[in-house]
Length: 117
Image (cartoon, rainbow, N blue to C red; front, side, top):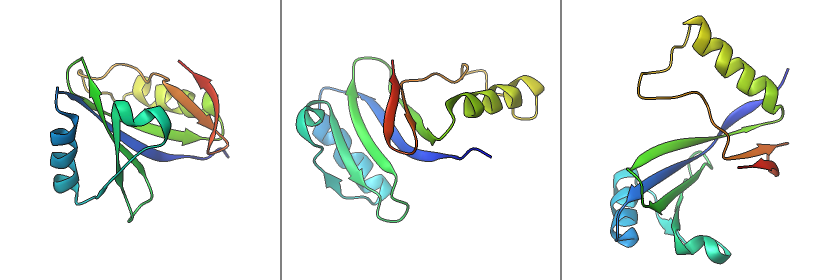
């Protein structure tokens, strides 16, 4: 059976002040801020999740603020198929505000990027 798990949460903030947004989420979640490697720090800030080890990031964006989940899997097709099957069957209907699952960056084998859009 394939494995999938929550890998992280990205908090998109439509803001001109990434530092203020990061401070807000750091205090709200009780997580200290850490810098990200390389150029990631231009639009992202990391929050340290010592309890669960999730990748939590605050991102500066120019679209409406939202939160999205990163799912790590060892079988992309099985994970997306299961999500779509649950949504289509009515067993786990998606709220009207959500569309079907989309793939931003897919991590297979729990870490190796195999597909990015």
